[in-house]
Image (cartoon, rainbow, N blue to C red; front, side, top):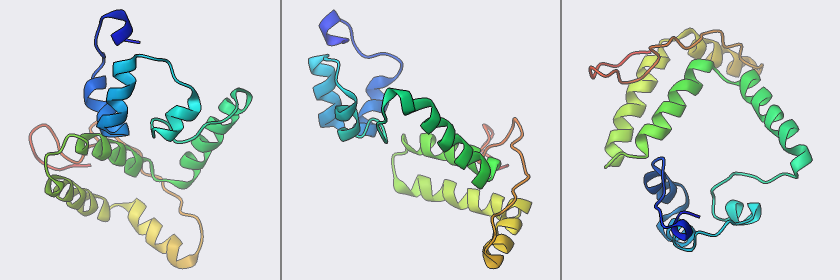
Length: 146
């Protein structure tokens, strides 16, 4: 819609969209400015799935319940941070360094101990650690922490 209104993409769309859907798809959507159906968003990898409108909230809640029941909260917070941060990385080595710091920092946690034991016993893990407001792999000062 932007190009049809004489404006340009906003909210860092010019940075995120090409990284999510590829430059060719991003340019087509931005050049044409057309509104496209959900199936095109799915085919273009802008969304991960399409469900009927009446199934949207139940599907979203089911996904949220699965994530909440089966994952460690601190790991989720760090994964989110790592994925978004590494979208802008210039080199895969940056991701490797962040991944390594994350593995080192999390490797000493109770969640990991519980995860290994539960894996060996073939039972679901029971993660209890919660993310503090300072939960991050790389602090602004450059030191790692969780």
